[in-house]
Image (tube, rainbow, N blue to C red; front, side):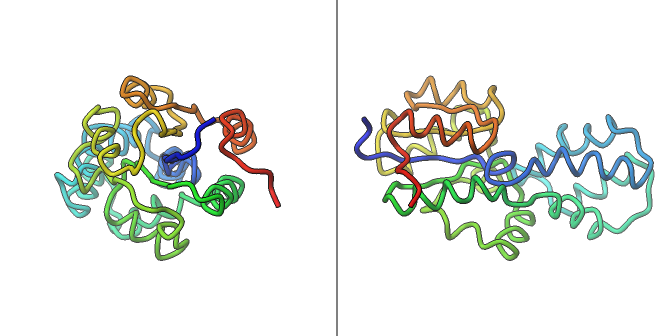
Length: 205
């Protein structure tokens, strides 16, 4: 049984919906662009550079519009991407239960400054956590082992007492190699079962 633990959440696809996947589908359909071309921007090198803060929002969207050959405001495209993220209410309830039980809660997210600001203004999600790391701040993104080590440096407990949750299995390799326990997220019900298996989650009141 883990007596003192840090529980670390990925955001997109775990705490929130998989907004990038939703945005790719929406942009492709709305502007009649091949889905692969949209994915190449949002999940390819331009998206990576944007997520690690190496290019600005304006630079990113200008590159996207040039690639897609569309004339749309960057603000419209940015809002479409950001609004594709909505809280997974069942996961939020699990976060609340862990917080009420006294566990340290951190986030680790490949994210942009604009999206974080939008989502926190709309959902006030940052107050649910004790801290964490965003890729645009540290100029690294998953699965770079350095970003996980930076996270461990902020955790109050050693790696052996940290549990990392992510919906992308390839992002679990590095934290596991650093000694963390990992959970491949499928849905909130499965996560609840895994947390109870680790004796981390108290019964719902």
